[in-house]
Length: 458
Image (tube, rainbow, N blue to C red; front, side, top):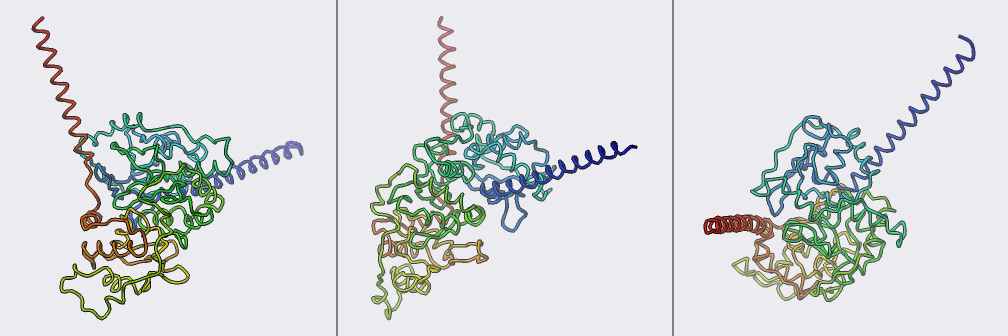
């Protein structure tokens, strides 16, 4: 072998090695990007049970049509998505169609993920297939009542309500605004919770981000309306809320929103959080006439505790006044006049969106369940009183809080508290659809009988 051949061989080996290093680095970079995209998309929240393996599925998701069980999306080849191709992964994510051709239910927000770009889908696929630990434990199958048990029915639903086009930048707006729109409409799927839904459980596009029910909780209006929405929030206040779940003088996250912050939004880059805030401030305003003033600007430091201290409590606990209940269960943390602590760790009840909204569902739920967070290692922010206070006591307490510290026009009833405690209002969707199907069959049978009789007379 002469020196030219040796040199050529060394050059080839060096070139191959360089290419390998570049491919490895690119793959590592792609995987890390996929991890970020998946985190922003909050995949772990629905596809993991508390204390279980990440992405192994099995979480019960309550919906108006029954309980949907989240699937295993680890790269297990027997129980997860390990055999999915990139195209099949994309179809599941953005079209709601599994590798076996069966349709997913829109509890998986593929109507939002449809906006995700090809590049981000590829990054997510690289992350799930190369970095997520495979879990070979299968999940239980979802069993819904007829006709929702027929997954093929979702094909018709998709024709009506799925926009399968990825996000396209709007040249009339800045790159920052477009980034915020892409994240809000797609990966963070804000509208899945914060928009109302029609009778067939599709988002009402004409009321985008105007507020919607999420089980027993209420995802509030986050349009640019200054009263019911976030029009009066400063951009940096929104950024802080997204990253921490709290903004002094405005509100604090609880329930599903607290989970979204802990699992997803706190990991947003500063630039992405800023972009989302910029976009949200531009969303067309939707006003709830019941919110006649900014929901964070109501209330004052005051109390009625002097009128009840030293007075014996009634024999029937359900006859306690709001001031008595507040004094016994709330004043030690929120202070006598609802002012909280000076640094905001114990929030003020006045100038607080939780107390200022005309919709009192979240205030009821916070009292029932408390506030649990794990973003800073502190699991408990506020204890729940579901086992301590009765429905009449909670209704009385909420009325006291809204009258003194929030919206005095807000309404709460014992029946509402009972309903929240029991899991929310019963949906009439199943009965409506089943009734419509029976009615359709009766019409078809009637037409068939009419047609047969008419033929006999001819």
